[in-house]
Length: 106
Length: 123
Image (cartoon, rainbow over the protein chains, first blue to last red):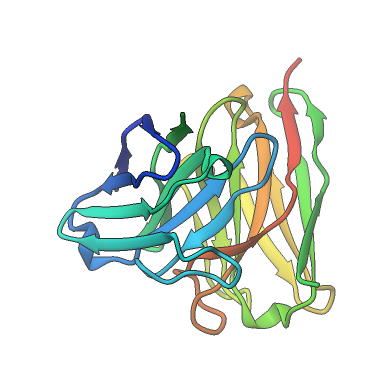
């Protein structure tokens, strides 16, 4: 079955750029989405179709996808961005999530 | 306001059954595929099942094939997940989510999520 791999954790200083990656076989041929989840909350879509931002998502969130890697970039990271981030794609009509990356802002 | 409201979770014994429901409001329900996603305590998100807008196409993760059945009633703006032969590893918060893909089709991103309903499988 298809797998998406994420690093368990990433740390970033406030105001710096956070980069979260997601790898999967030929992931660049699929659309990648990214979700933010804070403790006790439901996930929130922050990027879809590789680089599109839903209404209300700050433009400091951006995405890219090429080859085997999709990337979520948070520019000017703020304390409020501390959360778990999950990538997601579809393979053969099956949804697949990455294992998640905990972003710590310190 | 676009909203999803899940219900039906609870405590069930191993081998038992449970039917989850998700009522939608604020959008044209029949035009969108719907998905169930679960999250076991302290772990990540796991995609469970999806259904097309018309209900003709259904898809399942291997973990639920043969045990779970997704369905929808577009007249009531509701999607269901029937879960049979439940196991301890099915213990999780179950979320329903709206798919933002092409009209009625699965394969998009999940742009609206419910608050989740907890399912606990234990004797």
